[in-house]
Image (cartoon, rainbow, N blue to C red; front, side):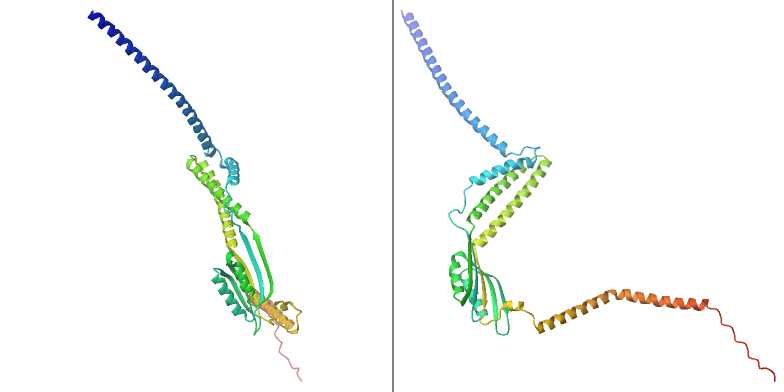
Length: 329
């Protein structure tokens, strides 16, 4: 009886173990299938990313054996696209080139010039050039080119206008905002282009490829330097306005008087200048021909001496005179 009960117990225990094993195996298979599906999806996504990355690398990578000229059109097209997509820096502000010309009549040109210098320096500007000319014994005139910050342009212009009697005034304002933005965008694109060429040089393995890329890099760096020079010029002209100030004194002779009809003294001075110039050229000509004249004179003297000696040798001797005889008586 006990043996039969033990046999039944072992049989049930074996069936329970088999059922548990089958359930565990099914769970493992189910989890593995889900994991495989996720892995396949992830693998597909990673493969897509990898393919995209490889494609982008092929677009940027320099293929050995190809010339840099063949890659230049594609790079230029990409630069144009980058320029269109690039944000416009400084679009919020405006960039204006301001210039003005003033002709002011003052009592003393030197004093007015000093006051103008002080006003410009107080505003944070500078005097680009200054020229003071004495017209006669009592009158002077000054011409100044002033560079003032844009914020102080109107104030300085008002001070200079009120320094004396205003004879003429002209001003000009040119908006170059689009030009400034375009140059900044081109600089950003050109810097990226130079960087790409440098990366291609690092990846190149053949000497011919390196030489071709060096030429392309030099060309792009030259274009970048030209753009930087344009940017510097635009920055200087838009940050500082230019004012040309001409100061003249009352009753001063007009500078245009020099172009009037000449008088007797002018004619006399012109004739004297012409005479001195002619004499100078004659002296120069004599100095240039003096060695040849001296040589010719020596040769002429030598020729005459030789000719005289030859004539003396070839001339026949003169007959001796016969003694006179007196007739006999």
